[in-house]
Image (tube, rainbow, N blue to C red; front, side):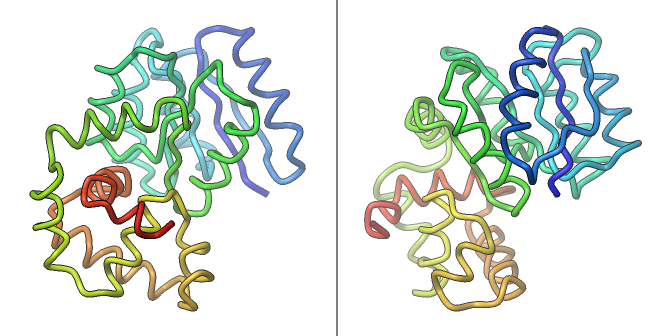
Length: 218
């Protein structure tokens, strides 16, 4: 079972998201919040695997709440709910440890896929905003030749792992693809993050994308 906290200041949005999540028998909404401060408090109380946060909320916005949650309950993965066009908010969240971004008007299957990916230690970007998010982050961090120079310091196996992170695979999925145990994948990721100077999977995915590794991975 994947316990989830849902936070959005609009009751109708929460109700709709709850119905979608209920379609998956392995996902359970264990708590709901109408503002960011309540979201942080409820995460501390329930310690869910995934916190699904709206960006614009009263008392404490979703971005600030995400920072607090990652600091206080690091085992809880954070997914941000966004509306198309909130580029500045998405860009800010890139550095704060979010596991991905979901579009409120997106395909309901994306919501289920995102929650599952985050619960398994992966990252998920709604396809409609993935390219914009990657391009925004890549413009700041590394593009083209610069990204390839950074990934050149990695071993062939580390590049394979990074490419699959860029493709959105979880640790378990990467392990199955490369015939590695999950603990070994985590060890590779720690080394990759350190060598690239990135803080989380989304930032690593940006470098992978800009270096062309995701295309190479097929």
